Length: 256
Image 1 (cartoon, rainbow, N blue to C red):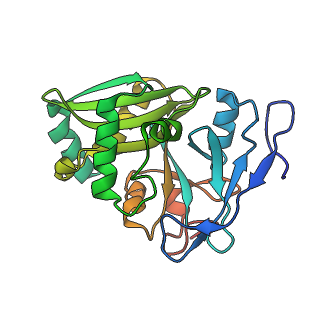
Image 2 (image 1 turned 60 degrees about the vertical axis):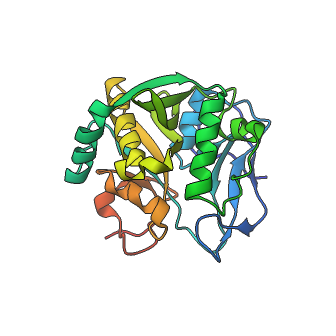
């Protein structure tokens, strides 16, 4: 058991635990380990905000961050909504998709339509992943939590569900928990479009940040996040602007 991270504003202490070492789900041949908040801790949105501002992420009701013994390639990012500037390719995706999709934030509740799309996405995009055989209960447990303010943002094209962006609302921003989409529409760049929509949505709500999760430079499925600029990266001690990162290194504690 470890002490609470420094700088907590709330009273009381929070136990942190280290998981067992296990195979990394992102980088073959790597070992992974997580630091996670005591599952019995009483989590508030303010505590969630404090932890996400220290590089933590949510999976189900677990709040965790990587603490791998021999690797630090997973880097938490946050995007400042007021300063974000879409690239030329991102602007093309936005301009092309925005008139074609009806987007609606909805409650975080189980629907067969969502679950079937989730399974279709995993089977096509992550066929070797452990989540492919998830039951409806495991799917719900993975994406939702009773203390989080979660929206299932639906993207529909001609009335048909095309994507769902599971998004947490926090006091200072939104967190992209998980996004899944119809693999037959992969050429429409729905993952990028969904994150662009979350940035625009957060800006309209007056929120400062979008937390897109972990950037892993050497993992194709996770490296795209660094193309949303400017962004800030969590070094393990502080957030630093993207132009101060040595992106030829591992992304943590490396400065130009």
